[in-house]
Image (cartoon, rainbow, N blue to C red; front, side, top):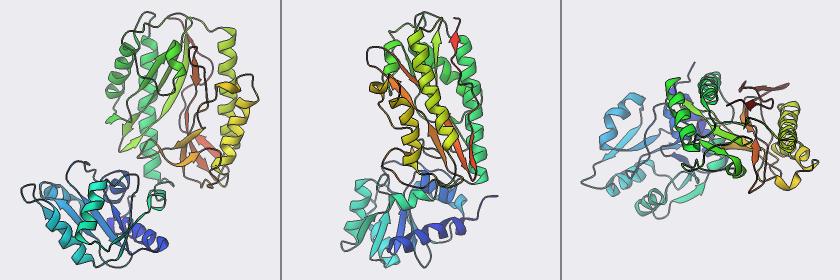
Length: 369
């Protein structure tokens, strides 16, 4: 059952206290949506909620959003503004109402012009980056969050199966990409989690490749597909690499190495392990192989309302993973001019281990196309 708005906002008030500031500000994005449930766009019009450590929250809302804002059930003061008048007076009224001296903001999300508008309204306002603590509230998923992730993943896996069934030699990467996008929406996606990566042959060696309209897939190619559906505000993020018509012995060996690394990540994950320990173990499998020079990426990243969020699964990050967090386990090996392999699962951390929310087969697959 979804918490009431007051409880969700109280969590941000507690963050302000923990950070030693008088309030926290949220702007449209994943934290804002987590707080008010209703999604709002981030555009040229400043829009923010300020949650004091003690006292009642206040909001600055573009006038054209007021009717939508009414659906939120927000009980604090609301300062609206119209395009014709500009927003300076609304910021001045907001800061005068709040009477705070310090504010934590989302350093990776708040745009510079909103920061400047706050400082113009109150030059002595101390603004600090509270990104890690603010976004950290999203790391442990609720049962509703997990259900949304499962729905997004299920849609994605059905779309992937349909897309792979239709792959034929001679198709371009762009044609395969278009088929994948159509399948995602046909199976119930509300949106794409991100623009898909569909890359074959030497393109698969680029971890963030773009589909090429002039590359026709051929026998022996690796075909790497990294994509996800978005459902109920949550994103799936899945990668599978298959081979077309046949796989060479070397390709099969590279694939097996990546698969062993992926399975190592599954095997060691449990609540209380650190992100460093997971990446060290997974990357260690790759380093111990003959293909250590093909390592280009960390093991993974958190997943939820954002495609990339905490925790980041990398050496040097000693953050402890709690039960309820979800991250991607996506080891890969890539050689520019040759091919790449990535296998990515979405992993839910539990008290005594983990659960793979992705169920699409990971065994070496050769498409007879």
